[in-house]
Image 1 (cartoon, rainbow, N blue to C red):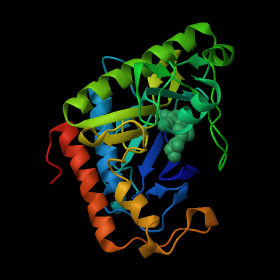
Image 2 (image 1 turned 120 degrees about the vertical axis):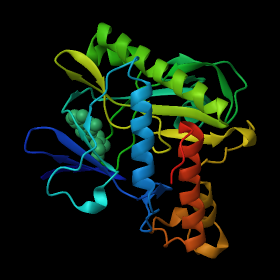
Image 3 (image 1 turned 45 degrees about the vertical axis):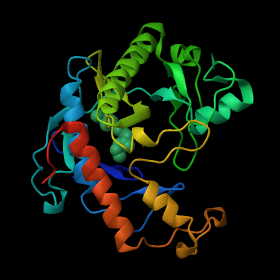
Length: 284
Ligand SMILES: CCOC(=O)Cn1cc(-c2ncnc(N)c2C#N)cn1
């Protein structure tokens, strides 16, 4: 099959029949670096979590999944982390919903009191829950660049008023459903990014959905506005990388060192925990 594109932690291939194959790697990224050390089973766990969400959200929006059967000629190690998907005409907008303020949105809020043109109340801090979830779309930055915030009017100009309204409605409903279910199971979904495409004039959910790679997952019992929140899955990696033990400085611009085995194991366990808590299924 023909390799089309490599993201930070996933690869995209074209199949002979014109469909695409998305393969999730066991890679993990932190401090804007894709680490050399893989997290065993991360690709499979997040692929199976995303498939579970696609099914649960089928009444909100159709999705691009065709099959999870490995195409002939695929490496056996792709089993469980490769998905055959329909080719969509992707809309060049990262459709982001935020229920909590942090990251780039917090930066924009501190500068202007608004995020993507949406004015927010005063006095919000890092990790504050927003009065209502908001639609905060961004452009799809080129490789190595950073996504730029878009106002809703920008989305209308790019996709037309009708489509813009559907993009927002679907994004907000996917977030609402995901955040509500996750919170019941002890996980805050602070924000999430989905990608939508057109197929025969119909909007179809692409990419992955409500995974710790496409969303910020926080442990609910540790939430405390006014400081940066712990990442449900990436905190062990982040803390170790900035600990004296790693000998690494994020500001150095150098590549991070390999992770010690105990950090890898603890991180794998967090992916298993996220999958089991959210789906109610055992990973074994
Ligand atoms: C490495 C994985 O892909 C991406 O990161 C972003 N991307 C998605 C597409 C796409 N293009 C057409 N049809 C689709 N169903 C999809 C999807 N998903 C292209 N790049």
